[in-house]
Image (cartoon, rainbow, N blue to C red; front, side, top):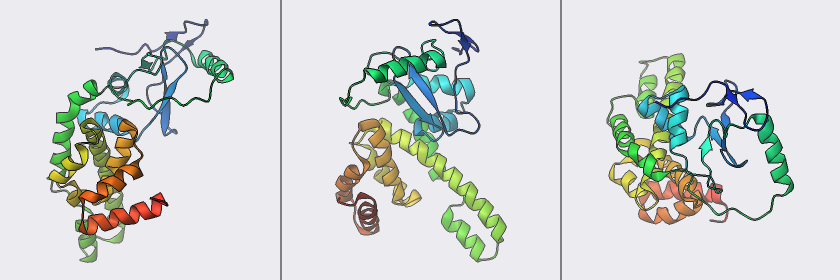
Length: 252
């Protein structure tokens, strides 16, 4: 199995450095650089693909970083994003970025999917299995939790503790659904969510989460996607999507 060098000799200066492979304890994200130029990606703890690889495959630390790195598409320059930054230390990268900014242009870079889809698709079946195991599980949802509290089966302190647990659990599940949706793509993701009754399990917000994920992978604004998708729904789902679009979208 591939591993990262614990101490890397910089190819541009006499210094050595340790690759950053995950956010520091007090940080919500970390940066991964192209191995060729100074382009970089900010990878958050909540990145759907990172969460899915961690939760579904049980990866962490070095193994998680390697798996995540393997599904990243090449940089616009053709280089690969790498946690060792192409063996260039942070000080040298800072100097390269500073020089690049001096000669930079204002031209927009054409959207490019951030994932190697052929690699990400290898995990589709595992993501699918995880999602629908959770949908079919007997774990209490919000409705059941409220009923327990209102019937006196649990006290207020227990209710709040279990509510926090539920929020964290569902947040993780939704991240996996987002990763799965990016693999399926905009032509299939919503119909798959409808077929498998994800709205019934998670509410209308799951459609918003899928639209957010597709904005990352396909480049179409989430609100524009939802404005098109709303035509496929009626009843309470249509009303809730209309309310969301009116509140968040302004002119949509």
